[in-house]
Length: 333
Image 1: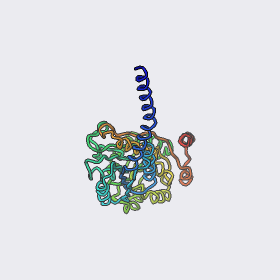
Image 2: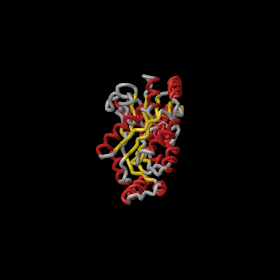
Image 3: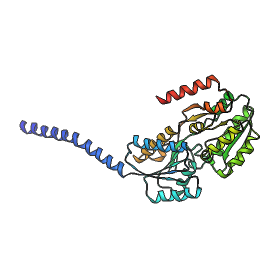
Image 4: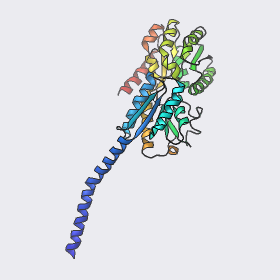
């Protein structure tokens, strides 16, 4: 009898031993197959460096979340609103497992195209104002994501430090982007409290930019550009005109400072993309949208363009230069 019990115990141990080897391999194989079969639809509103950085981050965020092998169906509407609707519908028809909208118009297009497939917002400053979610803490529908709500108070402090003689600020933005309108309202509120004379200069499309910028430059001491895809896509034109008029431009994105903006307090666009990709991965793993509150990515750093400062004959404060260089070195690590 004892021998039978011992034999039974040995058999159980052997089975458990084999299982401990084979089961993890099986699970790993199942996860690999699942990852390869996953389809992710991505709609980017327009091509410009900031949104391109976000797309790169999304791919890495998906990989970090276990979906490096997922099939990405990527469309770019090139700022054409009619294409946004068409491409969003195509991504829904393709039966992607999750949809990602890069920039507010793209996220809105996807949300309008489906109420069933999960939609992850990438770089949406005002998700409630854009009518993508009712509340940011408990999304009720099929939309959640990552917001890049811009710290306008910090940007105004930077403007004060870098250009203390500026009194009149013009805000250049697109009237067709809900995302921009909310930023304009907030900037005006904070800037007015600091004694600035703030004027709005809205464009309906990139065709209006040259005329509108020239009008603005004749009346202001500096230009502020919110997170705005229409302006970003034509930003080199803005910089050429502003430099010729010796007027500083304070954008909201690091890549726009690299393109010639004088300075900004910015959010790293690539890291925004990584956070967006990771959230999409959580949804793919089965986490309900209602359990994923909108994430506000608000890690900022000062960025300066010393070449632009020389062109405009502006002496950057040493404290600002040191802070920008320290932030750059920290990010490089």
